[in-house]
Image (cartoon, rainbow, N blue to C red):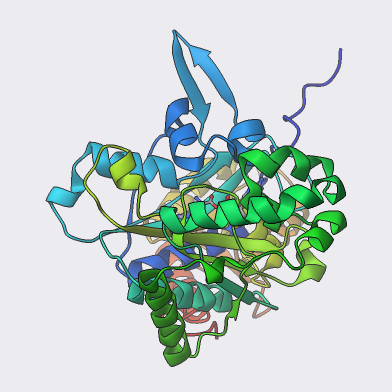
Length: 436
Ligand code: HAM
C-alpha cells in the first residue's frame, strides 16, 4: 500500500519549526496592535460568489486557483485570501454603524491551487490588516511605513517598496481601452497566456514576467497619463507623507497586482532575491474603495495589506529560542516517579516549564535529554533523596550540583530560571524599535 502523504503544496510544520513561527507571529501581532488594529477571525470557507465578485472573474486566482466545491447545493470555496471575508463580515455585522473607522487584522491559512515552489504553496498563511472608513492618503502612508518597520523588526534584508496609483474605476476603464488599442496590433508578439488575457484583462499583461510581454509593453501608455485630478492629488499626498516619514519607496507605474478590486493606492514590498527566488514579494496591498458598496454595504473607503508568513519566515533572520524547557525532573528508578510527578507539578505552578522522564531511564540518558531540550536545571531524585526528602539540583550552565530540601530546590529553581527568562524577554524585539 502506498504510504499516505500530505497533499502537494500543503506542508506540516513540526514542533522544531514552530518556535520561529510563533516569534514572527508575535512581532506582527504586536506591531499591528500598536497601530490600533484589532484581531478578527472569519471562516476558512466562504461562498464562491464572494470571491468571484470581489477579486474578479478574470483574475488568475478566480480562474484557476480556487479550491471550490459544492455541498448540499451551496457553491463553497476555501478562502484564497482574507480581504473578501473581512469585508463581508464588516457589511454583515453593520460595523460602520458602530464606528467611523475600523482597523482589523487577521492571521490564518489561505488556499490557492498554484504550482508549488519555494515560498509558494497551496496552503499558506497570511497576516493581513484592513482599514475601513478612511479615504487616506494619510493612512496609506502610515500602513506602508508600519510595514517597513515590521520587516525591520523581523530582520528581513533587502526590502524594496513599490507604490503606484490605479485611479478609480473610470480611470481604469479609460486606461484599459488605451492599453488594448496599443497591444492589439502587437498581439502576435505576446506570450500565449497574454494573448488569452488581452480581451478579458489587458492590465494583467503589465505584470507578466515573460520576456516577449516585457518587450511588447516597453512603450505602452502609462496609467499615470489617465489619472484624474482627485487621483493625482491623492497619490501626490501619499508620496509627500512617505517623504516626511523618510520611508523609502519607488514609484512603479507598471505595478497592477493580481486582484481586480483595487482603486488608487497599490503597493508591494519585496525582499532579497537570493533567499526568496522568483517569489520574492513578501506582501502586497492597496485601496479597494468600491468593495463595501459592491457587497451591499454603504459607500465606505477601504485599504489593506496581506503578507505571506511562509515568505516572511524564509526571509527573516530571527532565531527561535533553543530553550524548549527550563528544567528536567529526573527520577532515578521506578520508586522515584511518584515523587517526581509531584515535584514537576510544583515547578509548573511556579511557571517553570519542565518535563519529567517517567520511563525509568538511566541518569545518563536523562542528562542527555536535558541537554537536547536546552534545560538549565536537572532535579534528580534517587533513593537517598527519597529517603530524606531532598533533591539534587544540577545546574548545567553553572556546572554545579547540590543536594537540598525540596522547598529550597523549588526556590532555587525560581531564582535561577525566572531571572534567566526575564533576561531572555528583554532581548526580544522592542515594541518601538529594532530588536536588541
Ligand atoms: P496577494 O498579493 O494575493 O494579496 O497576497 C499577499 C501575499 O500573500 C503575497 O505577497 C505573498 O507573500 C503571499 N502569498 C500569496 N500567494 C501565496 C502562495 N501561494 N504561497 C505563499 N504565499 C503566498 C492579497 O491576498 C490581498 N488580500 C492583500 C490585500 C489586503 N489587499 C488589500 N487588503
